[in-house]
Image 1 (cartoon, rainbow, N blue to C red):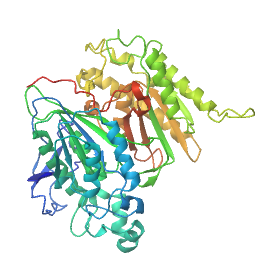
Image 2: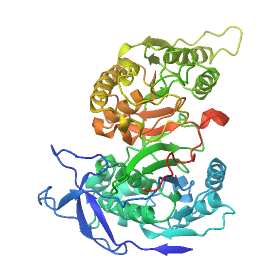
Image 3: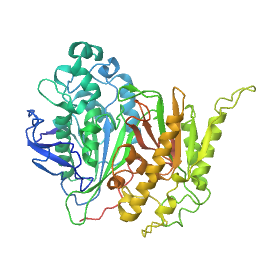
Image 4: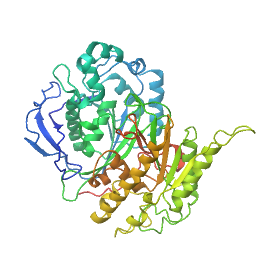
Length: 508
């Protein structure tokens, strides 16, 4: 297997009250280093603005899709041991099975190249997914897991007992966590930038990357312009698949970048589990309504004005089946017919979920229609004509005129407040609110959840019939942790494949 080394990287420095001129070009500090030696991070007292520049990525000639996969369950995952970049754990039998599921998920894709971390748990996952393809896997040391120095190899309770306050900081303030004179998360973001430089200059249009939890988080965050404060916010489960689309700009320079999918897992995205290591009892599930009969004639994707067509009916039913085992507290939707019909399908399945006997009592699910969840009228104000569009391209919200984008952003802010209010009103120990609406609404609401601005609208993508899951381990007033975005595995043969061809093939 080939291997390549790093040459330089960039460290994100969060700035207060400093505007980002471009969501794909956050501000950062340059530090030169080799990947084999870790540089000490700049002193905290140094001016945040000193040495800052726009984060640039190499220009590309044609659209490029990058599929990120986290390795399968490892022996140290199963033991609850802190792995870091150590190489003592290997895949468990469950991990091998997860990797095989991911192989089946990606089997129809004609990847041009595979990059992998050199660590055994990742390399073995890559070998299973890569299968009989003839091309060699390229290992890159910069794709190794986060360096955790003295923490590595400890069970979590041992780390707490031995390091006390430092371990607590790792849990609650990871970006500023320091150990053995190093800031691991900041160093990780630096390596991620170096990885992108190598991935993007490679002559390929479809790239598979198999690495680790923290590394994949950093790759996603640095690609769309998010700093270290987003560590543990964009989850990566074992063998979870995430997709990033890179579109060249006619004038060259940094490509447009869109997160097409986050953490499509071998198992159910709504099954029990922790969020970034913490139990979450409050959850919002964003459901994109099914397609309607009027979509082909509408000037914008997913108009929602007419009744659902047969595909839309199937999508709504599949969503309801996926959510069957959840005890949903409330379902809110806009007033448009497609949203209402999708919400009604989910509600009926929820209410019948416990009725397996003759004397059962139907489960009550509160449903509400909220006009603030309607954005279709706003979208039709755009002069962009997308009528007849079968596959909506990644980042299509970038094409909205500024006034339309502002209206969408403002309306979605009201909608997000409504949904959070519904979650906070529930006195149940565990509560789940389903919000049904247009994909553009949910993209914007995720932006509000992540405390972004309207300039990030084109950085996320959702398909009709998809779900996205946001957990709140600290309750509705705390930060949301995104479990998945644009999950579509429940749609089966009716889903848009993870690895569908990128939209544009033209050269620039």
